[in-house]
Amino acid sequence: MLIKKTISALISTLLLSGAVAAASAAADTTKEDAAADKDPSDNISTTAEPKKEPTTLKKYNITFLDFDGNVMTSFNIEEGDPINYSDVNTKSLHKHLDEYTEQDFSSWDIKPDFADADYTIHALSKTASITHIKPPAKHRYYTLDGEVSLAGFEASIKMTVQTPEKDEKGNYKTEESIVDVSESCTAKPSSLKEAFAKGDKATITVYPLGDQKSLCSFEIIYHRGLGDVNSDGSINSTDASQVLATYANMAASKDYTVSDKMLTLSDVNMDGKLDARDASHILRYYAVASTSQKTVDWDDFFDYDEILGIK
Image (cartoon, rainbow, N blue to C red; front, side):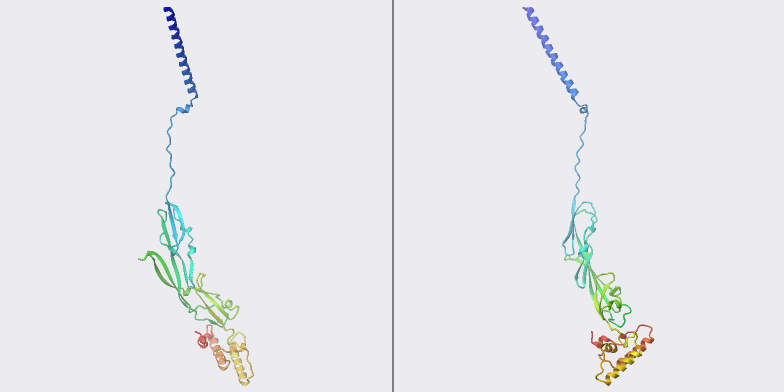
């Protein structure tokens, strides 16, 4: 009986030992398989890089106003970027307030170089006004040779320029100056041949040098062939003699008629008549012109505006 128990215990011990060994072997096999399946790189230790947040620069609003405070344009510019003033169309500010007043862009009230804050930038104006006009002294011509004369012409322009400084009412202060442009003006058309190409009256327009906007216009008159009664291109004693002969024929006969052209060429004092006085004036003109070094005009002998009652 004792021997059976001993044998039974021994068998149980052997069985238990086998089970343990088998379990141990199975465990070892599982570890080996796991080790074989594991990526060698899993054994390398890594340190995670910190994530970088994108940098966002602040943006500023740059607003441009016209002369009247109306918005011309507005830009959003990143902090530190330059402000490009050439992107603003200042040519649109140019305008004619009336026939004698012109306005244009002068400058900005402030002009920051870079965007470092919100800015409202106001356009400042310069205004030119014609304050004085006196037409040329000469407006009657007796030849087509030469140029239209601007002698005696006077023109002044008042320039008013806004400054960045404001008065107590918040308005921009201005600086004024008077500019005499008389000597820097040109006439169009400039030549007498061009002016009288279509007739004996012409309109001359005066422009400041280099400008397309006129200052004023005035009328000129061509007295074609005045005193050159026989139309030979010169005024001399022959013309005076012809006037005297015509006048004598008129006096001798009431039926003697004179053509309109003859009357126009002979009536040098413009009193509406052909008579001996006209012949005398033609002789005097010839005497002066034949000895003078300069061109002689009928204006040197008569003030036709006074004679004709023209102011």
